[in-house]
Image (cartoon, rainbow, N blue to C red; front, side):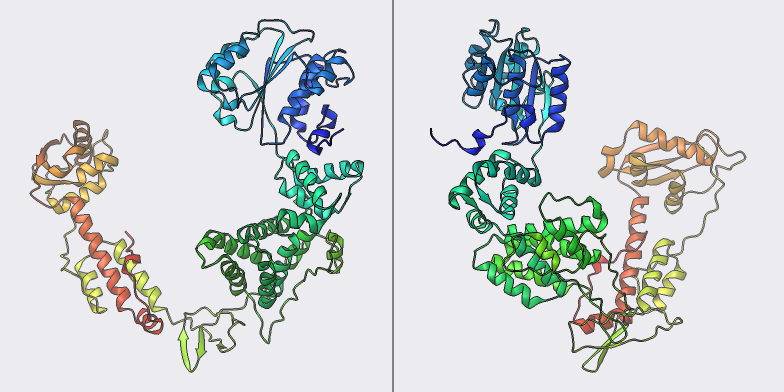
Length: 638
């Protein structure tokens, strides 16, 4: 007899043999035992997770000669026929090869006939999303109300391509990807039955390479058995798959823990001999850092789905949470920029060196550097436990968070006789620069930072209306405005009321011009398009009974009768009497509130820029670092 591949030889014949998908099995088993059967089932999920297998088992459960049950006997003629693929009443259709509407009509013409000798006629349509639109339309009515002796079992890897009308007529079950841990457990069961010797690390490599598919895992195992001459060894599997072993990733992490650039560069050079996928290597590193961060936050929440739970806990004990987050962020940004490097190897080296360069590290006479924990690997390393023995600490202990001592930031650094002051906050000495001598200067509480004073002054100027007094204060600091700012007299106004309740005793003879129209507009509480219309209007005439506003032609598209009515109602409520508004569209005769506000913002912006440019501290920073002041980043607070 010819050899039968593992994926077909160990295909489950009952629900008990099925690995995973408990959420689907629970619903199907309860439906079978309680005789609550639907006429159409839809199984979705990626390749190799058991869609067709579950459909065939369900067909056996429905047609078993011993009765409908969740446990078919597997011995009767019907069960054997379905298992061997020769049952006349189980019609399996490959929708990928029969997409035409004529094929679907031919299939449905036989639906009305009773099954040959089984209880139900079962239609198993695989890759149903490949059917054409006309095929789906032809299938809809039969799928909704089929004869009592017909059951539809549909399977697809892409349910988004199915029409909603089809989805609404089926019971949908979403099958999940299988974890590497479950795949390894299953391989450990079947390999001894086959008489194949194996190493557990090799099975973890196969489980991760399968990417959630049991069929892919069994196919890769078949390939590994042939490659290794009836054995599954770690070295053989790594060579066959061309993947990077987790040991290499943890070697790089050891270099980060020890701040050992030489060790990292040597390890990258060793990996370069194997022509690795540097993008994949960086992804593996990020995946490990992600699990380490989870272990530091929730130690009990880390499972062994990747086969490295003890290693993850060990690294979590050796690194601080801040370092892990820093390494992850640098790696994430580096993964985006890796394609732009001159070559992938140098790009990966720069990412690792950047992690070292930006790692906070304090070491001086008065503070002791916390001793880093190191994860050492033995050669060869067949199992994870040998790695843990080098740690001299049980990996099952809760993760201890290491808090680095934060030193005060020095306010100046003396280099070659020049002192550059960076502010009043002390800075921590950096060990990576031995030439620099750190001096700690006690900050003078009475001395203020000129930059902070300048920003405070800008904020104050921008927050208040600019008057001649403000302009004189700016001039006294050596800053001149672009054009003189004239102080506008303050107009006293009565307390405003709502539109429905005008103010009693209020005089409507308050003089109004384009300058005071700006202040009146602020008090009207308009919003949206109405405010935009009023802001672009200039005052043409004002009397005791009303006023005339002129809207510029450039903004005429915003105006309609509703906006005019709202503005008139707001003015009536403000002046406390019937106030008639006359609205015109044409060329503005005066300055609009929008223009006045724009001029005020421009004046405040000019004052802010001048204050920053005239600041002594800013000039010192520009001269010291040959910098350029980007005035576009200066914004006066409105």
